[in-house]
Image (cartoon, rainbow, N blue to C red; front, side):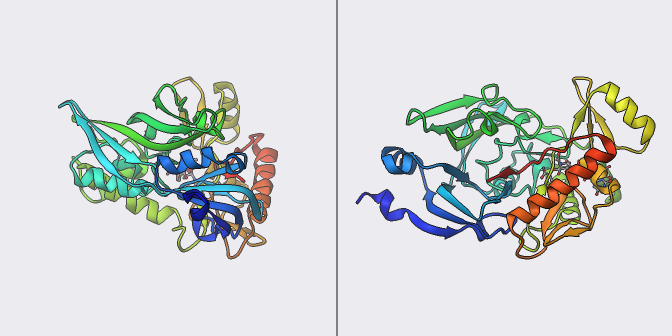
Length: 344
Ligand code: EPU
């Protein structure tokens, strides 16, 4: 019996491994400590054949099925290192299994600013590129340099740069053509030595003004972001959730003009391509869903874009609530909301 068979666990509850706290079971479960573990799975014919679910922090996942018959590969590889520093920028490598927030804190402690607006985003570093995480005016792609991944089609490691990853708003190739093929093992970020604070986002600017801070440090921005997130977003440890449940929808300038005429208060943000992004939380709020419940699934009272597990909800119940919200938003505004988490 090889190592991988010994480490493989059967019928493992995923309840503590997804931030919604859904009690689903994985038929096969394996922790990935390094590339060798992935090579061993690839080398084992019966394991290679199974459907795979790559698990990081489980913070962008809705387990709809009560049982996953494939194999869960949970990334637990660790390590953060300075790859190089050319005087202009520092290149930092982080293993997929590191906690994203822990990594951001490390960069700030070491004196490498840049990622502070993305403080306290739940999940692992390896999951961050999948949906090109972003918050308060900054996205992962702004500081991303490259990543390495194991290719389950060839059994080889590949290296991808920013362009290869096809990043856009909450999207990348890892959600589409490379979804079941590539397993991200580590990422490299490039943080320019010349740093400028990014405080264009209303909430952040307001929080700093309230504290009398006009020329903030990266740490002060990080503290402000953490305070806003703690106020607006429920802590998954206390109330199961996956952050924003829907993406903010994008509409054309023509559609926006029609919507604005009817709903002058609708929050919207112009995009570089001339389109507009609309706040999905506002749409849901306007449909009267904020703070409401459907079965054991609910809509957060502080932020309508966040769906919550009100206690032992099944994944199916959260999905039903999402469907009801989508139907109401479609009926009232003619806009189709797209969920952010992966449904498994
Ligand atoms: N709004 C309401 N009612 C609500 C919620 C929001 O009217 O219940 C309005 C707010 O008043 C505001 C607007 O909607 O005018 C936007 O709200 P907010 O600033 O909270 O941001 P968001 O668009 O709801 C996005 C991201 C968050 C990210 C914040 C800050 C998406 C899907 N969500 O939320 O990301 O933290 O901006 O940058 O893009 C996540 O992806 O999980 C996530 C939390």
